[in-house]
Length: 157
Image 1 (tube, rainbow, N blue to C red):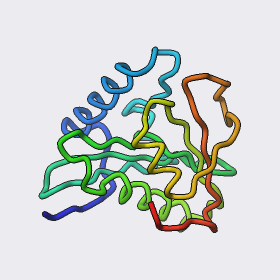
Image 2: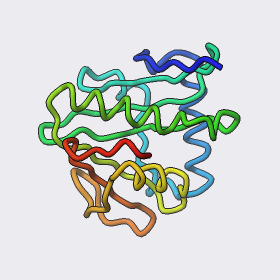
Image 3: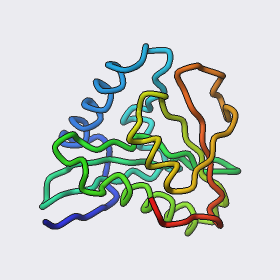
């Protein structure tokens, strides 16, 4: 099995299919007001890195990071169900964090839902800690907010 991760355009048909699967999954867990997805058009912005993980050439997972002045925000980290348990989420997360660190960011943040138990475990194993809402987010009983200091990353996720 060959796994690769590379930057791609988020508006290609294969990537749009993964984003749609991610949207459908999130909509099955949370009401619309608790889903904070960014669309493919927003992912084309110059301050966004969008990655796709491939397994034997097939697009299997996505991840993005949006750069802000004081931190980078992890967005759209999603692994298609047939490709789960292969370590793609961990690899994608670390690729995004490596990118942030290489571009001088000192902190990464993210928002995720309370029912995404696999994602929560991934982030906590990586060293993310819970924080209050940041940026434009507001308190939401269905959301959790995390951050990590990029100088403190432990690659144990």
